[in-house]
Image (spheres, rainbow, N blue to C red):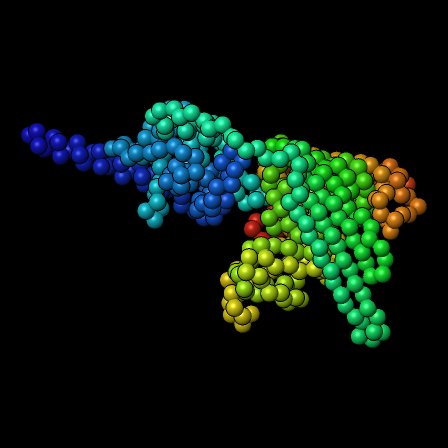
Length: 432
């Protein structure tokens, strides 16, 4: 009788577990499979396979454990999550499994460990706000305290970390005229920021200073003092001025200032359109070939040096162009399949913000560059300025307003929206 009772109990437990797992699996039916990036408290972690069902995201428990630091153990009724803020039990009914991978939903993470999950459409990534820090994890994992080492070497308050000279020479076939263009770039660190100084010498002219600025970046804002260029919208003119520029984001400003794939050497934000001039990167296969393609047409090829560096100069693009720009990287020959395709196209979807996020940008100063005689004009030194604001009304819809005053031109105000229409379409609507 006792053995029969135990058998019935085991069968009942099995049925409950199976029903719970089936319930979680049922929720994934019709869900959309996505490969997204993962940011934990603003830091970039890794790519992650997730399933989206409405506004809920189902994520691998093991991957989340590696990214956030919580520990999980299997129990008869589900799993146990251990974090610096405590221990939480998750029943099997709140979990799911796909292809042998245990999944947990963003709603369950919020209910149990207070982890907030937001989708960032601009970076196509999930942002996880975890209510504990690296210090909390270290304290939880370490059984005894260790004394922190005092630094015996400090970073200098000022430094010179960049010195670059380039010179191009060409001859016109028809006329036989010679042309040359030389540039000198110097940069480094000064106080709490970085500085840049550049000079240029076209053909037979003398060197002139064409750019100089100092940058300072905080967690949510970034500032620049010196020469600036902005081209905010096709409905307003681009302006060159010398003065102050700043940007602020309600979340981390780092995604907007990540220049790892930016085309300009001195862009302020990564979305700036004063970009289609030079491409300098350091991510190619050593000794390979880099091929530049614009609208699927090869326009230039360069050899990659042994450090993985390559460069394209004087791109045949207009400022603000939305052309398709790709770099195909080859290990040995362009007749082989490319080992990597780097997409550097300027996209409308990059101008969208996640729900509830705000981006503010403003600047002002005197038109032109007082240290560049080549840029002197009638409006040189006249007051100019701009203000730009964006707000993420939803993950797929962003509102924008721009106000700009350029020298003698009247104040121009532009309002509009940026919308993402699925995975392959985006639309912009602006009125002035």
